[in-house]
Image (cartoon, rainbow, N blue to C red):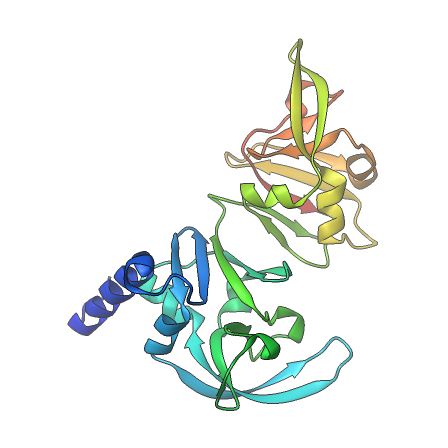
Length: 265
């Protein structure tokens, strides 16, 4: 808990202003939605009213090209501290649907920026609000930021291990994939099941060439393991919207409820 009176006031101000934005601001004003562990909205005017910093940063593109810039914005960690939330992961979604998910170490030095070279960001310059992370590569910077999703193991499924990127999915994120519906037998009874094929999720994580197996871990620690070839090639293995591992053709021991981690090994 914050002990200083001024810190308490800051928390109350931020909580009230984010939670009640539609009552105090023009509903047409640009805003970033905050979902997951906290539900609210940060408008452009609210961001400008917070304690901001102006700093230099270098955007490093995938080609190695470096572009220097001067930005003004609010430290992301300061916003999280005022909300008293430290998520294990944050997903950032742009207006063009580009999305990345970052760990604490990756997002820690991030800023929500509203100006570059002293000029307010526009649609043409990646604004009105963009994510800038000075110590991370350009692929982690997000133009046209529209949503911040705060996630931890209690409300998300994490795909990690021998992969090029970590994938962290909230239940609603599964709607971004093409769903599949099948008839399958579970404990002697036929049922209809709908979800996302495991192969599609593994493709998004981009497993490494030396990966050999996939472990599925439930919230209570229960786990099963398959070879990567078996898990990836079987189109009837998929994840339902309530994070259940559907294993058509396998015994009930392989059907994992409350799935929380998929680890590629």
